[in-house]
Length: 318
Image 1 (cartoon, rainbow, N blue to C red):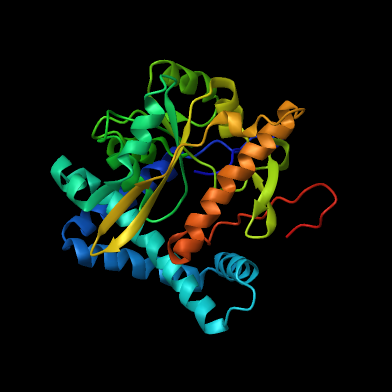
Image 2: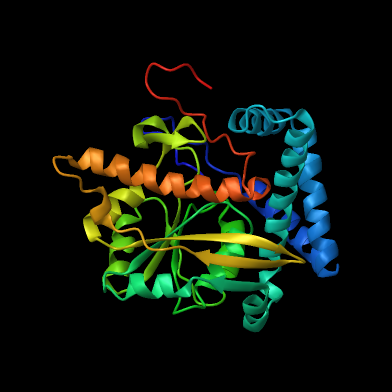
């Protein structure tokens, strides 16, 4: 999931059909090769490939190191290097395990990902306004979304479709295999509202950078981060509770989907606060919850993403 192009930006070049076909062939070759390996070996290979990429791609290595150094001042170089390697490796593992979903049964998904705090989602849904799941690129988030759809009916994750339509179909097939319904990020509001009116659950990740024109700037690891206000706007408009949902690794390819206590819209409607201030307060609250999760297991968050790229007006680029 990445930010869309900024308003007024030049249109992207049309994609080449040959390029799309070559990417699909490479993807199928990779997934076919991984399917021949034992589960642990495939995950280990994914981790090793992403660690190598993080070392060999100068721009990504700089972002990874810069983010960790700024987030954890005073931490030794050795510990920062360990976190950088762990974060890159976990991304590779998460990707491989998501690709393996096409060969997993529902029973295996349930066995691999246990749920804690299911009563929190039930309490949120009992209010009759639907519910949001607030999550991040943390642990094996794709497996977590699939497992969440097996709790009390399918959920509707908001995703940014890939530019390559062939690859998008491959990923969508895995994401929807057990009933989840995808909502495309661009122009998502109508589908989100329809899902909530039907008592459904919408999952949104808000931990990536967005362009300034779309951003609310709230603290994240001590720095202002350009954050999408979409979840706050939708919660304040619908009163649907927001349930934090993070997927914690437990070793040996197993995870814990932890559902936190619901966050209610009334928390952000302070006396005298206008709509913009309520949106900022809500977005700051969601981001603080996300930061607390990342601090609990910093090696499994996506530090390779340039989270602080967009800066407020008047502040120099990061």
